[in-house]
Length: 422
Ligand code: ATP
Ligand code: CA
Ligand code: CA
Image (cartoon, rainbow, N blue to C red; front, side, top):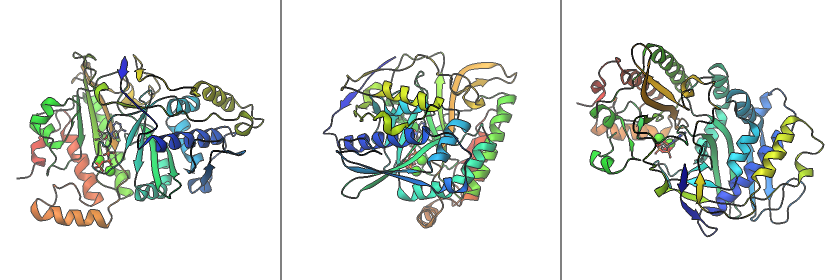
C-alpha cells in the first residue's frame, strides 16, 4: 500500500520541534532500555530524567542539530507499561518512532490545539498536550498503571511515554506517545467520536457526504440509525470492559473523553485510500548514537536488540515521500481481545458468527479533569440546553451517561434516541 504525501522540509514551522522530539525520545528511551530490568519502586512514578542537547554533544548526549532540553517522565514506569502491559517489542518501538519518516495527517484534528503525528508505520501517535494534562497524567499514573495491570484488555488509551521538549527561548512542549487505534492496512470508512452527550454533538451531514475522513459524532450516529453489531459473547466482554474502564475514569475524576469508533466495511475493502491527499511527511534526520555511551558494557538481549534497531533506524539522507504501509496486521495485538481480528474487533451476529464489518474501538482523550474551567463551561452551556445532555458534566455523571450510551448503541441495547435533547 503506497502512500504519497508532501515532504516537509527544514523550513517548516514544526520541523525543529519534530526533530527535537524524536532525538530526545531516541536517546532517553534507549538509555533506559539498555539497563537491566528491575521491579518498579514508588520513586519511579515521580522520576524525571533530564537531558541537554547541543551542537557539540557530550558523553550523555550526542551532538544534535539544535540546542534544546529534553525531559523524560517516569521512564521506568512507561518501559514497564510498554513491555509488560502492552507487549511492545522495545526495538520495534524505537525503530517505528525514530526511523526516517514521521507523518502528520491533520494539523489538529481536535479543537484543543494539540498536534498529532504518526510514526512511519502508522502504529504510534505523538500528541502534544497541555501542561495541565501532563501534570494530571503524572498525578494519576499509579492508578492508571494499576488499572492496566488488572485489566489487560482495557479500552483506554495506551500511553507509552510522556516527555517534554524545551526550546532555547523557553517554550515548553509536552507530549505523549500512544497507540493509534486505526490500522495501517485497512481503510476506515466511517469514524465516530462518541461521548453520550447530544447537545451540539453533530457533524453536518452535507459536509460528511463529501469528506470520508470526517469524524462524526453522537447525533450522526443516532440519526443514521447505526448500531454496533456484536453478538452475545463479544457484547458481554465489551460491556464489562467498558464498565470497568468507566469506573476508573470516574475515580480519577475526568470527563470529556470519548469512545472512538472506526468502521471498516470488508466488502468495500481498501480501494479508496483516502489518506494520502492530506498527509504531510517529516523526514528529520536524527543523530546517531555513539555506541559506547549508550550501552556501556551491556550485553543484555535488550541492549543488543537496541543496538540493532538504532543501526537500522539511522537515517542517512532525506528520502522521497512515497511510503509503503504494511499489507496485513502486524499481529502484535493478537493477545488483546478487542484488537484480535485484524487489529480490531469483528462484528458478529446473535449466534456469535462473524459479519463483514471490523470495528476499531478505544477510549481516547482521557486527561481532562473536572476543574474550574469545565465547571464554568458546564454552567454556561447549561443555561441554554439540558444540563444533563451537554458535554461538560461532573465526572460521575459523565461516566454513567457514557456507559449507558455505549450500552444502548450495541445491537439490542435499546433506543439511543432517548439521549437526544427535547
Ligand atoms: P478536544 O479536546 O477538542 O476533543 P484533542 O486535541 O484533545 O481535542 P482528541 O479528542 O484526543 O483531541 O482527538 C481528536 C481526534 O483525533 C479524535 O476524534 C480522533 O479522530 C483522532 N484520534 C485521537 N486519538 C486517537 C487514537 N489513539 N487513535 C486514532 N485516532 C485518534
Ligand atoms: Ca476529544
Ligand atoms: Ca482534549
